Length: 158
Image (cartoon, rainbow, N blue to C red; front, side, top):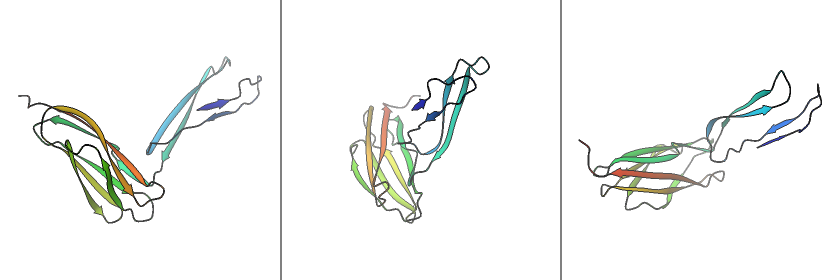
């Protein structure tokens, strides 16, 4: 969200402030803003903000998309990694796709890295969306939500 000095005298200086909201982001971000002026030499200038958003827990990927045949199980994996210098403990919480998707949490590296394996449950062709909430022992991030979407079509094309 920008704020800036509306009028700057010729040869003068002004101030432009850009604010980037990083809620929901993790990793590298690159944002830009175009500044337009009546300066005949520099009518437009692009300002760029590049940063790395550090999070206490890295979720890769942040979303699960299950796509394929409804007659076969489709599997996707999400990795959960501690980014702080203290052990991470996670426990599954609310899950609203019990009849459509199963999941299994496995600890890969004690207190540091977990894997959540999602698998569609074979059945009729359908489209759905839901979530799995994960509770953690980090006060910085006590709960995470993994969003899940499924689009399973009937039968195999051949």
